[in-house]
Length: 254
Image (cartoon, rainbow, N blue to C red; front, side, top):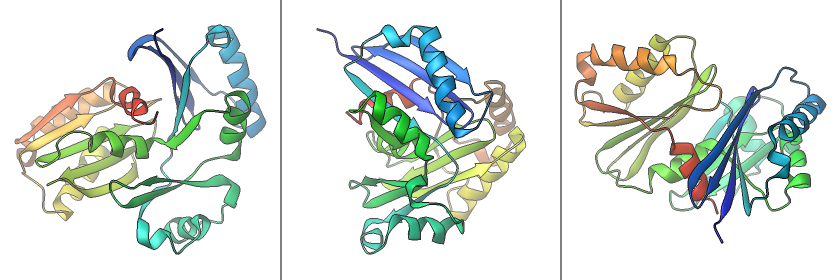
């Protein structure tokens, strides 16, 4: 019997459901939230799942990646002595209820990803899919990044509607991880250049893996790639578009 896996990519703007059969994409359905009230998120999801026919499809596994710019990596030994809400408030200086804060451990990197996730996300999917695995998308991206060789410079850049996640690895170490707001392609290039420069990695040979996050515009990729090719500091950086990076990252969570 072929394994059926439902990959759910979710943020506060949109959601995408990808049905994998034996690891291959069978169908993809996406939806943009029109109303961003907690109770309406649930109602809109119910309506979309019914209309798209997803309600009638059985899956053996369900994994959910939640993306948001409020994500921070903490050394495991530091996190062990703290509470997640205290760590979150130290990083972001926001008064957020403990029910809206979660974390994922990455023991292979000796770090913990602490992040904000609305309570409605967990309550909605746990009730409907009790065996669901819910993690921050940054956690899944990092796990996938280090599932292949990272001795040479490797960058993963994941844009969403108005922010992007950036992860940089070299010599099998995580050199940098952060989220940045952006409005234009130039904003992305600026933050990328600054991050590489701060880590002494500008002009290095390597690759940049571009991964369109849920809700992102594909046009931004062409703009960034074209502009990068004009900048001498990036002439040794090979840019490639990976359409299945996030879906593949979900496979490592089951």
